[in-house]
Amino acid sequence: MWNERQVTSLRGRWKAGEATFGAWCTIPSPWTAEVAARSGHDFVVVDTQHGLIGYDVMLPMLQAITAGGSPSLVRVPWNEPSAIMKALDAGAGGVIVPMVNSVSEAEAAVGACRYPPNGFRSMGATRGRVVDSEWQLPLCVVMIETVEAVRDMDAILATPHIDAVFVGPNDLAASAGLASSYEGKDPDHRRMIEAIAKSARAHGVTAGIMCGTPEVAAQWRATGYQMLALEADTRLLARASEQIAERAKKLAGDPRAGSVNS
Image (cartoon, rainbow, N blue to C red; front, side, top):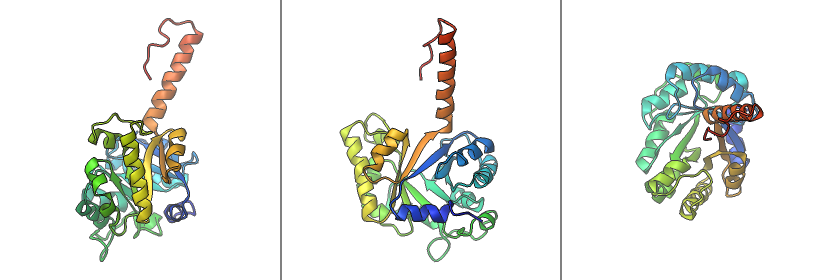
């Protein structure tokens, strides 16, 4: 069963107003997922939307995250019931549902996460019931990442049984015709992100956001965000690989030093 650091505790920490920090997995590998789970993060996300991860790899990644002692979340490819239910039946502690732009879409996400009478999830949590004592109440996290959703965010976040809202800052910026950035460099971008956190507080919903760096996480924490996702594994690997190659070239006096763009 889930230990004290698992989903029940994560939900409780959010309700208590605590900050939590998450790892983000885009590489299809149980080993990298286990490393992330053992690295001190408060939750680990398996990204099946933009990550290179299919169901057959997602399942052992969830097993590895459980072995590592962290709560697991799956960002599903879309707000589609079968994808949500399959992730939960495989033992994910919850799902992050992208591009939720209306109340009806929020209700659809919740419905796929909850059994009747609160939803329409089909009974049959094959792995979920084995590893999670709270398998009937997984975390339901909806993403607000468009101007359309921001306009309707109060109604969306009033939808019953939503645990958290997660902001995709780059998609939100693109939707508004602004330059993308995790930190919200454009004032209009920043105002929208801050407004989402305010609406979440008003509706008793946890506010989450993709941050990339600890510094950006600290910035958004100060505005009320609690679910703070740090850098994705692909970016971590790429940056570290570039840095070590660059340093080796400089030490060797290689004229190619400085030729790679980070």
